[in-house]
Image (cartoon, rainbow over all chains, first blue to last red):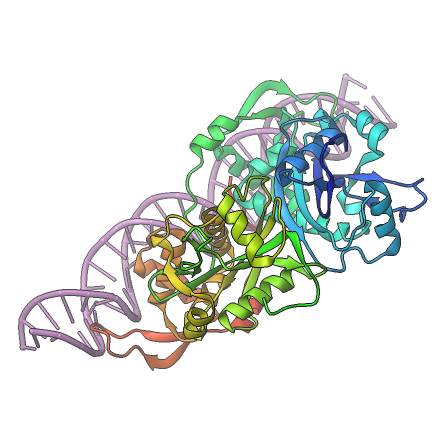
Length: 246
Length: 246
DNA sequence: CAGACATAGCGTATTTTATACGTTAACCTC
DNA sequence: GAGGTTAACGTATAAAATACGCTATGTCTG
């Protein structure tokens, strides 16, 4: 990290689960450290040890900013992983000790999840400076350290959140999107399939979706009207959900 | 803590938000360290610095076990508080340094929440060995350090959880309870009021509630039938909730 | 340039769930 | 035994979820 001044705390780190959406599938931003002789040549989550006397939240922000060049992205705490055996592999330990010039024992890592509009992300910068690329979430079966477990937790929380807070979905969509895009994102995250006619009927009730005078172009079927998401209306018109399940 | 052998990590702690229910109101277990000349004479959450190379989860369990004498209680991670200015008061810092014989800078604290059946808890032990007592959640307006904020986060999460996972409610109820007790717990946690006739209609659909051949005694009104919670049926009969809100 | 094809987009019928509220039952206290 | 209090059952209406038929409008292909 470019931050300096204070030392790293050898027992505290942050890791970021960064989600994106390409209109069809859910994506995750991962770092490939192939070519580093000490590492285990697996993909890993972006993250860092935390410098002493630094806010955790602020540090997660910093990691993301440096990685993507993006500011003010959606970023929220996910979970803290604190098993004593998190770093069980010797080569993992050595890689961390070499990278940060500290001697480590157990590292407690607080994971964050971030939602990015892929069309805003600077993919060149990501690739050039961090070997970071978007991967299909469904294609990932293993990651370095306990990062696969962290990713799964991220998916769990994303699923839960989406049920009550649809804004989660719109954080992933570009400024202009079709109702089909929205359905795709719901299906990608929840794993359910929805009847397209009923799905759009439901969306039709939402006051925060503004139809634009613009349609899809170049698709081999009837082009869909594009919509934009009205954040202000979203927060003003959403009614309190006074409901529970038995 | 009775644990020994390894040193405390001066930058990692756990705090526990312990909820209970007395049939009517939501309670929280707090420690009163009045009489300690260094502390700020406010109530605080039970918690502890974590020894090096110890699981966070395991340590939260340990804190609870020592406090309440209870084993296998419901315990789940809540949130991690990692602002650089968490311990802004000098006397708080001094109290911690004295108690654990370590020199501290910023402490990252992972909070857990626990749900206790009050009738199982050993109140004498709690009071004798830790000055811990049950307080009405609604009566608490301030706590030591950032513990009030942590309690609020606990309440938030409890509210969220209860919507989808009613088991949360039954963790707080004794083995035998009335439907009214269930309604009270829902109202205490969510802050909503429910129509009693509709509420019990909804509960009537739940397969996991077993009516017992037993009624309330000594109440100045028609005595209610008592029920027990069937954990197995709960997990077997609950249908997947395939629903979202716009 | 006609017809196939694919998704957008509108509508209707049915079932399920939520909400509102009337009424009787069983215990206690005085 | 009258009055107070909550339990327990029932009915009627409104709202939401679900299932599914059908037309519209673009591109692609022969």
